[in-house]
Image (cartoon, rainbow, N blue to C red):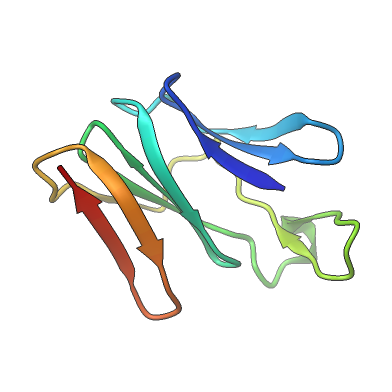
Length: 108
């Protein structure tokens, strides 16, 4: 799977084997400029100065998509509202870094 942000103001999760979008967010208030993802979280940063966080269905076998590899790939339901939104930036969010201890975001 691959995650993408776009000028269409949406974030999309793609199945690389079929080339099909398997999840799509509602429109952000601006272009999606950056994304970060790990096994538990998917995060977007956009021109509307917001950071949005979706949580995976980790621990729930139905929350994972089939994978050609032995490991399970987390599935994020981007059609749902984000679990968290951060509104503290005063400029477009242009970078994200997700670690096991913190989420870092940068803006203009």
